[in-house]
Amino acid sequence: MNDGVRVDSDARDGSTLDLNTAQVRHLITALQAMLERQNPSEKPAKKKKKHTRRGFGYSYLSQQAQTVYQHMSRAGSISAREAMDDHGMTSAALTRRICDLEEAGYGILRVSKVHPITAKRYTRYSLTAQKPAS
Image (cartoon, rainbow, N blue to C red; front, top):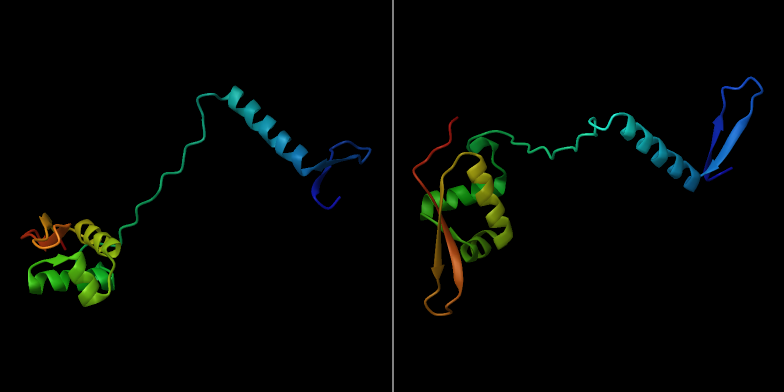
């Protein structure tokens, strides 16, 4: 049988049981239900998504995050337009790098502004005096 399972029994006569895929799935579901009825309090724990933090401080930042940090420390602040024009970085990438900086322990100040000519809203990010614990 090419798309099923062959189960050898423990019987001395050497008998086997051929199951197709649907039958195997049904059997697994029935066994899981039976185990759950026997141990109702022992439900399998859901796997939590691990947040991996590589470390704190400048040396643990990605190259893009280091670029954003350098821009803010030299120019004072950065907006999505500046990130795109100066570094070829999308606004989503800038937002993620800002979050990376915060996770690394840097303090970030967000200021929502409105462009005086286009009246479009944007956010300007700048570093606060808070430094990461190394």
